[in-house]
Length: 233
Image 1 (cartoon, rainbow, N blue to C red):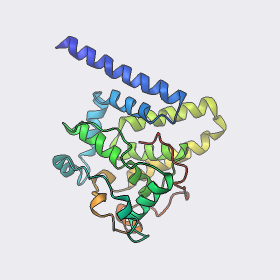
Image 2 (cartoon, rainbow, N blue to C red):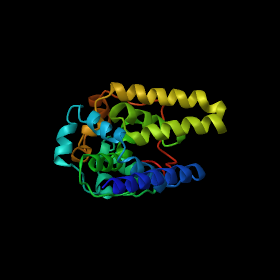
Image 3 (cartoon, helix red, strand yellow):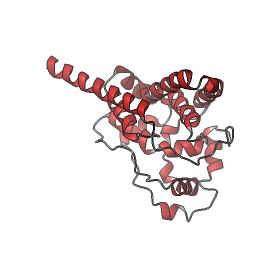
């Protein structure tokens, strides 16, 4: 048993390292981000993230239900009111020419696997509701938001990696990046838990109403959702 546990840890480490190296070489490689997160699945920080998330109102119930929504009907969502979350989501996906089911799937067998799947399934919704953009700064701002909300280890890894990459390659951009990360973390601490929401059962609800309900400003720095990068999770 001890030998098997050692082999599993080694596989996790290799998966993480493979993802990190691939992401450095080509930030557009979505699978590399999933490799990193899958490698982090069994570390203590992931279990602590789940435990922390479940202290927030409404999240424990979703874990007990193992709530995952069916694939969205983009055509139907585009028929909703233009001020609705559903319309905003469908327009976002359509304009990007993107597949809403792009994220890596895995069987939900425990709290950790559920946590990862639900975070992946709702990633684009979090972008829309928080209004963080999909450029590098926007993605890292959202990751800082996630870190404040649910302590997601992948978020910590990507924020740290983004700061290091900026330090080495674009030091002149450090002030803007740190401002965005600070904004994301601050908003994450101030906002109601996004993971607790059943967005897909309330697509028709106005986006502005969602933001008001959650305690989010209607915009942060007017970020655009154009130019989405496929490496977002």
